[in-house]
Amino acid sequence: MARQPRLVLPKQPHHILQRGNDRQLIFREAEDYERFLAWLHESARFYRVAIHAYSLLPTHLHLLATPETEAGLAAMMQKLGRFYVPWYNGKYDRAGGLFEGRFRTAVVDTDLHFLMCSRFIELAPVREGEAAEPAAYPWSSYRHHAGVQADSVITDHARFWELGNTPFQREAAYIDLVGQGIAADELAQIAAAVQKGQPLGTQAFKLHLERQTQRRILPAKRGRPFKTPSTETV
Image (cartoon, rainbow, N blue to C red):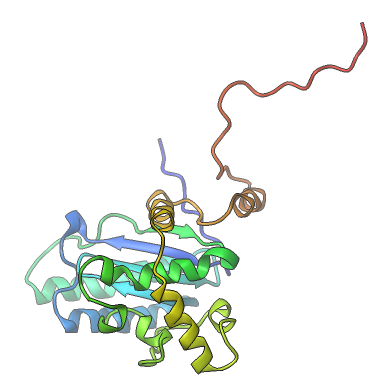
């Protein structure tokens, strides 16, 4: 059976997950992260994709991004691979693919799930044991949102700007938000959505996407279709 095409919608945030083949390392040294981020910045601008959040982990990476076009995400990731993989292979004297098949992605409900997904991504280094706190990890966008260090890769989303009227207010509100952590059910919801390529949002959001895209998103009801009783008289 042919794989169903990714659900990618222009001007809508997407959570992207890319892993190394067999969970192998895709970043080993600071230079690797720096090179990848430079090419991410270049590729995102070229294909008009706004990067709102990211975490680069040794064996995988997360992005929260909004493409201007339906083809933008795939084109950006392909360009990244064409730059980074040959460079990485040459540096470490290896051959072959680096990433695990095609990247995974989930459309994100802007209103209710955008900031939750951003926190999920920027707390990943803490969950993975790479840092004791998000501000201590240099290869994520948290330091940008917390006002520690500006990051040219990042395009702040409107939902972040709504956190306050000044940079200080927005940063303080975001620090507090991340400090609250993420509930276990939210973690499971986000992880399942991106692994399965399903939208991250409410039932109403998913129903709206079904109508917009003319493709099934919500699970089909089990059993035979319900028949409306006849109103005809005998």
